[in-house]
Image 1 (cartoon, rainbow, N blue to C red):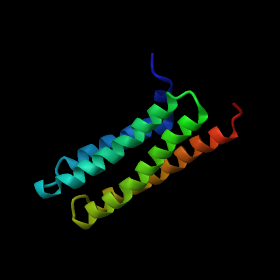
Image 2: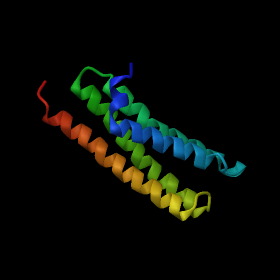
Image 3: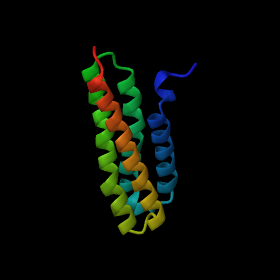
Length: 120
C-alpha cells in the first residue's frame, strides 16, 4: 500500500526531477564533483521534504517542510546556472530543468496555500 504522499503529483514529479539530475551529473568531471554533489542533494531534498512534511501531524510542521522543499528548488537554480556556464549541462537541458523547477515551485506553493486555507 503506498504512502499518502506517493499519490501527490508534486511528489512524483519531484522524484522524476531528482532522478534526471542524478543522471545528468553522473558525467561531471572530477573537478566539478562538488557541484554535482550539491545539485544532487538539493534536488533530492525537494522530494524528501515533501514526503517528510506530509508525514507531520500539525499544520505548522507540514508547512515548515514544504517551505524547505521550496527553498531547495531555489537552491537548484544557481547550481544549474553554473553547470550550464561551465558547459556541464547543455542549454536545452538547462532550460528544461528550469521549467521543471518553476512548475514544482508552483505546486509546492499550492500545497502551502492549501494548508493555510484549511481549518484545523
